[in-house]
Image (cartoon, rainbow, N blue to C red):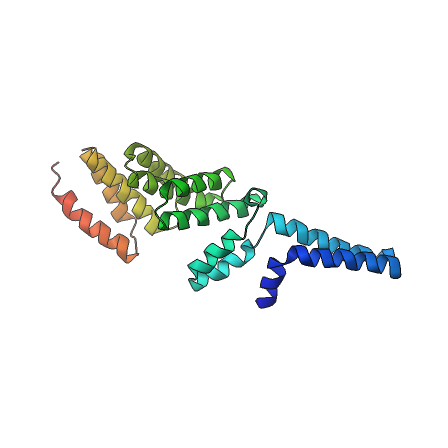
Length: 215
Protein backbone atom coordinates (compact mmCIF):
# COMPACT_ATOMS: atom_id res chain seq x y z
CA UNK A 1 0.00 0.00 0.00
CA UNK A 2 2.83 2.41 0.87
CA UNK A 3 4.55 1.78 -2.48
CA UNK A 4 1.23 2.30 -4.26
CA UNK A 5 0.70 5.62 -2.45
CA UNK A 6 4.20 6.77 -3.38
CA UNK A 7 3.63 5.76 -6.99
CA UNK A 8 0.30 7.62 -7.14
CA UNK A 9 1.49 10.79 -5.41
CA UNK A 10 4.76 11.08 -7.34
CA UNK A 11 3.74 10.12 -10.86
CA UNK A 12 5.22 13.25 -12.43
CA UNK A 13 8.68 12.96 -10.79
CA UNK A 14 8.74 9.26 -11.72
CA UNK A 15 7.78 10.18 -15.28
CA UNK A 16 10.64 12.69 -15.48
CA UNK A 17 13.09 10.05 -14.21
CA UNK A 18 11.80 7.54 -16.77
CA UNK A 19 12.16 10.04 -19.61
CA UNK A 20 15.73 10.73 -18.53
CA UNK A 21 16.34 6.97 -18.36
CA UNK A 22 14.89 6.59 -21.84
CA UNK A 23 17.27 9.16 -23.29
CA UNK A 24 20.18 7.56 -21.43
CA UNK A 25 19.33 4.13 -22.83
CA UNK A 26 18.78 5.62 -26.26
CA UNK A 27 22.14 7.35 -26.42
CA UNK A 28 24.18 4.73 -24.54
CA UNK A 29 22.55 1.46 -25.65
CA UNK A 30 19.81 1.49 -28.30
CA UNK A 31 16.64 3.41 -29.15
CA UNK A 32 14.86 0.09 -29.69
CA UNK A 33 14.65 -0.33 -25.90
CA UNK A 34 14.37 3.35 -24.99
CA UNK A 35 10.69 3.47 -26.02
CA UNK A 36 9.70 1.35 -22.98
CA UNK A 37 10.49 3.96 -20.25
CA UNK A 38 9.09 6.66 -22.58
CA UNK A 39 5.78 4.75 -22.86
CA UNK A 40 5.55 4.18 -19.09
CA UNK A 41 6.30 7.88 -18.49
CA UNK A 42 3.51 8.91 -20.87
CA UNK A 43 1.06 6.56 -19.13
CA UNK A 44 2.01 8.06 -15.75
CA UNK A 45 1.41 11.60 -16.97
CA UNK A 46 -1.94 10.61 -18.47
CA UNK A 47 -2.94 8.88 -15.20
CA UNK A 48 -1.92 11.98 -13.23
CA UNK A 49 -4.43 14.14 -15.10
CA UNK A 50 -7.21 11.63 -15.89
CA UNK A 51 -7.26 9.66 -12.62
CA UNK A 52 -5.31 11.67 -10.06
CA UNK A 53 -5.09 10.14 -6.57
CA UNK A 54 -8.72 8.94 -6.71
CA UNK A 55 -7.69 5.27 -6.88
CA UNK A 56 -6.75 5.55 -3.19
CA UNK A 57 -10.04 7.08 -1.99
CA UNK A 58 -11.80 3.76 -1.33
CA UNK A 59 -9.24 2.77 1.29
CA UNK A 60 -9.87 5.96 3.25
CA UNK A 61 -13.66 5.59 3.05
CA UNK A 62 -13.62 1.94 4.12
CA UNK A 63 -11.42 2.72 7.12
CA UNK A 64 -13.61 5.69 8.10
CA UNK A 65 -10.74 8.15 7.72
CA UNK A 66 -12.82 11.13 6.55
CA UNK A 67 -10.06 13.63 7.27
CA UNK A 68 -7.62 11.61 5.17
CA UNK A 69 -10.20 11.41 2.38
CA UNK A 70 -10.65 15.21 2.43
CA UNK A 71 -6.90 15.74 2.23
CA UNK A 72 -6.70 13.29 -0.67
CA UNK A 73 -9.43 15.15 -2.59
CA UNK A 74 -7.52 18.41 -1.99
CA UNK A 75 -4.58 16.90 -3.89
CA UNK A 76 -6.64 16.86 -7.11
CA UNK A 77 -5.33 19.98 -8.83
CA UNK A 78 -7.22 19.74 -12.15
CA UNK A 79 -10.66 18.16 -11.46
CA UNK A 80 -12.05 19.19 -14.84
CA UNK A 81 -9.42 17.01 -16.55
CA UNK A 82 -10.43 13.88 -14.62
CA UNK A 83 -12.02 11.04 -16.60
CA UNK A 84 -15.80 11.65 -16.49
CA UNK A 85 -16.91 8.86 -14.08
CA UNK A 86 -14.01 9.69 -11.76
CA UNK A 87 -14.79 13.41 -12.00
CA UNK A 88 -18.38 12.67 -11.03
CA UNK A 89 -17.26 10.66 -7.97
CA UNK A 90 -14.88 13.46 -7.03
CA UNK A 91 -17.63 16.09 -7.01
CA UNK A 92 -20.09 13.78 -5.21
CA UNK A 93 -17.59 13.22 -2.40
CA UNK A 94 -16.76 16.93 -2.25
CA UNK A 95 -20.47 17.63 -1.94
CA UNK A 96 -20.81 15.20 0.98
CA UNK A 97 -18.03 16.97 2.86
CA UNK A 98 -19.51 20.41 2.08
CA UNK A 99 -22.90 19.24 3.36
CA UNK A 100 -21.32 17.99 6.59
CA UNK A 101 -19.72 21.43 6.93
CA UNK A 102 -23.12 23.12 6.37
CA UNK A 103 -21.89 24.86 3.21
CA UNK A 104 -25.09 24.03 1.35
CA UNK A 105 -24.52 26.37 -1.60
CA UNK A 106 -21.15 24.80 -2.34
CA UNK A 107 -22.57 21.29 -1.84
CA UNK A 108 -25.32 22.00 -4.37
CA UNK A 109 -22.83 23.43 -6.86
CA UNK A 110 -20.61 20.35 -6.53
CA UNK A 111 -23.54 17.95 -6.94
CA UNK A 112 -24.59 19.66 -10.15
CA UNK A 113 -21.03 19.47 -11.46
CA UNK A 114 -21.07 15.78 -10.68
CA UNK A 115 -24.31 15.34 -12.63
CA UNK A 116 -22.93 17.36 -15.54
CA UNK A 117 -19.92 15.03 -15.62
CA UNK A 118 -22.30 12.17 -16.35
CA UNK A 119 -22.62 10.20 -13.13
CA UNK A 120 -23.42 6.49 -13.27
CA UNK A 121 -27.13 5.69 -13.32
CA UNK A 122 -27.13 4.08 -9.86
CA UNK A 123 -25.70 7.29 -8.32
CA UNK A 124 -27.78 9.77 -10.31
CA UNK A 125 -30.86 9.16 -8.17
CA UNK A 126 -28.78 9.60 -5.01
CA UNK A 127 -27.49 12.93 -6.32
CA UNK A 128 -31.04 14.20 -6.83
CA UNK A 129 -31.98 12.90 -3.37
CA UNK A 130 -29.15 14.98 -1.91
CA UNK A 131 -30.19 18.01 -3.97
CA UNK A 132 -33.72 17.59 -2.64
CA UNK A 133 -32.48 17.42 0.96
CA UNK A 134 -30.32 20.52 0.44
CA UNK A 135 -33.19 22.49 -1.12
CA UNK A 136 -35.45 21.46 1.77
CA UNK A 137 -32.90 22.62 4.34
CA UNK A 138 -32.67 25.93 2.47
CA UNK A 139 -36.45 26.29 2.64
CA UNK A 140 -37.04 25.85 -1.10
CA UNK A 141 -39.75 23.19 -0.92
CA UNK A 142 -40.75 23.50 -4.56
CA UNK A 143 -37.25 22.66 -5.79
CA UNK A 144 -36.89 20.01 -3.09
CA UNK A 145 -40.11 18.33 -4.23
CA UNK A 146 -39.01 18.29 -7.88
CA UNK A 147 -35.58 16.84 -7.06
CA UNK A 148 -36.99 14.20 -4.72
CA UNK A 149 -39.55 13.07 -7.29
CA UNK A 150 -36.80 12.87 -9.89
CA UNK A 151 -34.74 10.78 -7.47
CA UNK A 152 -37.44 8.13 -7.04
CA UNK A 153 -38.22 8.15 -10.77
CA UNK A 154 -34.58 7.54 -11.71
CA UNK A 155 -34.14 4.98 -8.95
CA UNK A 156 -32.20 4.78 -5.70
CA UNK A 157 -29.56 2.20 -4.75
CA UNK A 158 -31.20 0.82 -1.60
CA UNK A 159 -34.38 0.67 0.49
CA UNK A 160 -33.13 3.16 3.08
CA UNK A 161 -32.53 5.90 0.49
CA UNK A 162 -35.89 5.17 -1.13
CA UNK A 163 -37.70 5.38 2.22
CA UNK A 164 -35.88 8.63 3.01
CA UNK A 165 -36.98 10.17 -0.30
CA UNK A 166 -40.62 9.20 0.29
CA UNK A 167 -40.52 10.52 3.86
CA UNK A 168 -39.22 13.88 2.67
CA UNK A 169 -41.88 14.01 -0.04
CA UNK A 170 -44.53 13.23 2.56
CA UNK A 171 -43.19 15.96 4.83
CA UNK A 172 -43.34 18.54 2.04
CA UNK A 173 -46.93 17.52 1.21
CA UNK A 174 -47.89 17.95 4.88
CA UNK A 175 -46.49 21.48 4.83
CA UNK A 176 -48.55 22.15 1.70
CA UNK A 177 -51.59 20.64 3.46
CA UNK A 178 -51.78 18.12 0.63
CA UNK A 179 -52.73 15.37 3.05
CA UNK A 180 -53.81 12.89 0.40
CA UNK A 181 -50.38 12.74 -1.23
CA UNK A 182 -48.72 12.97 2.18
CA UNK A 183 -50.35 9.67 3.12
CA UNK A 184 -49.52 8.11 -0.25
CA UNK A 185 -45.83 8.96 0.06
CA UNK A 186 -45.76 7.87 3.71
CA UNK A 187 -47.24 4.49 2.83
CA UNK A 188 -44.60 4.11 0.11
CA UNK A 189 -41.92 4.92 2.70
CA UNK A 190 -43.29 2.16 4.95
CA UNK A 191 -43.51 -0.26 2.02
CA UNK A 192 -39.83 0.35 1.24
CA UNK A 193 -39.00 -1.73 4.35
CA UNK A 194 -35.99 0.31 5.41
CA UNK A 195 -33.49 -1.35 7.74
CA UNK A 196 -31.46 1.69 8.86
CA UNK A 197 -32.33 2.39 12.52
CA UNK A 198 -32.56 6.17 12.02
CA UNK A 199 -34.89 5.85 9.01
CA UNK A 200 -37.03 3.28 10.83
CA UNK A 201 -37.35 5.68 13.78
CA UNK A 202 -38.35 8.54 11.44
CA UNK A 203 -41.08 6.36 9.93
CA UNK A 204 -42.29 5.46 13.43
CA UNK A 205 -42.44 9.12 14.49
CA UNK A 206 -44.19 10.28 11.33
CA UNK A 207 -46.77 7.48 11.61
CA UNK A 208 -48.05 9.15 14.80
CA UNK A 209 -48.63 12.39 12.90
CA UNK A 210 -50.13 10.71 9.82
CA UNK A 211 -52.59 8.83 12.06
CA UNK A 212 -54.02 12.16 13.22
CA UNK A 213 -54.62 13.46 9.69
CA UNK A 214 -58.32 13.27 8.79
CA UNK A 215 -59.56 11.45 5.69
